[in-house]
Image (cartoon, rainbow, N blue to C red; front, side, top):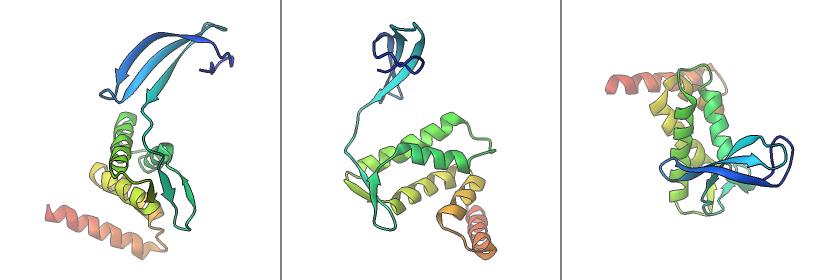
Length: 154
């Protein structure tokens, strides 16, 4: 593992622990060059999943894109980083459980919208406005009316 401080390739593991209910291994490492410590995480690599974009391009599934989308939608909302990580884990797990080698980006977006809808309705509308490419205020207001009606129906 390359040291993030000095780029040395030799290190030693000083501590290993399971994290995320056994889905990750957290390792504390000490660089043999500069003696500084840093943390790494290991996870089982699932099937290589390709995401099919709207225009037909294919790219590797990237968990960090889900995380970035959630962070942007939840910006300045009372939602912890830990919660955002957990939601990202749920989405990634559901997508992996589909067992497909290719998945449409639309499905990833819909999974994200489901989670945001339950988590925070302001974050949901923020994400929906970009994801669904609202063209004008009327589309935005339609989405708000739908949310308001759903709240009344509960």
